[in-house]
Image (cartoon, rainbow, N blue to C red; front, side, top):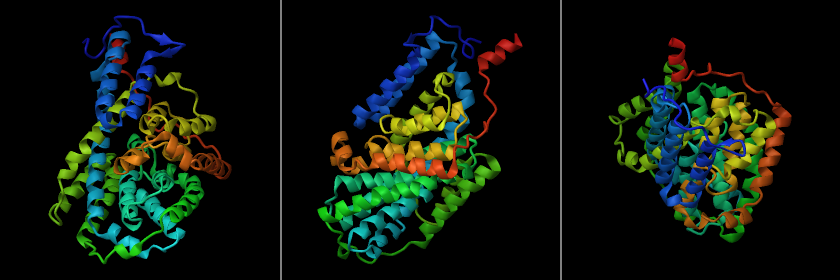
Length: 411
């Protein structure tokens, strides 16, 4: 059937030995960076362009490709929407609102807030942790935040999420794809020094710019039922992944049970939908790249991917690495996670915080005020490499045969 195994209508296009699909993918990511108010539309347009090119110029079947990818895409969709509900439950639990009164009223208070963001990211995800941290900072600093501290919030959330399969979309993708949750844990060997190297100078800058003000934070009520639902969702994700290899099922089962315990704000789904579709479009586009033409996996390549993730979104980079295989997943998780902090649109957390604080949407201002994120990335990367070494993991999945190859074998 031609829908599964189409014939090439034209010869594939190569520019400087690189397939045209890579250029289309690159243009999509550039468009995402330039048109940050239309990211979903840009990502979908780029995905359609790649599908059309590969269908017309290569032996590509979209239905066959989706046959390979549907489980990962559905799992990712369920987790992204589910984590949005998780973040909403946690935000309204009263815990984030009560945290500021325990912060010191000097520069260490700002650093303590970054540590909280770091830890929240490991349990929720980096987007939720960033938005919660940004909301707390907005209150205790009376809406007057230094750009360096905004960048530090993003860096802290990306660092905190790098060693947890629940902490970042990239590590969640690894988990869904079959990477063991303990295989990314050693990312914290680099994440902790990165937090210190970025957090201390940024907190000092913020304190000099505008000191912390805890008196504006009043006593709040902690909703134990919302906290219980958050715990159920986290346990459901881990349990369903172990038993069913499908963590989204556990998350949504916990959401369903939680709806009988406490009111669920279902409108969160509508707000999270555009961002989720955007990320899924990038992941699907990345899955269509011919990974046999990527550089061989090594610590040098991984270091470079960290820098690349600051310019191109780290989600598709992670997808390409997963398809290619042969990486040290903990080192890769830190590289593409924390590396995306160098520029505001390098990670989903940066985009989320920049939507809250539009003044952060300047590459020049971001790099000028938070330049130390770059050396912090390099220093922390080599600390981890020195302590842990480079330990590439054997392929955790059997190579997937293309539907066309299967049909050709039958004939």
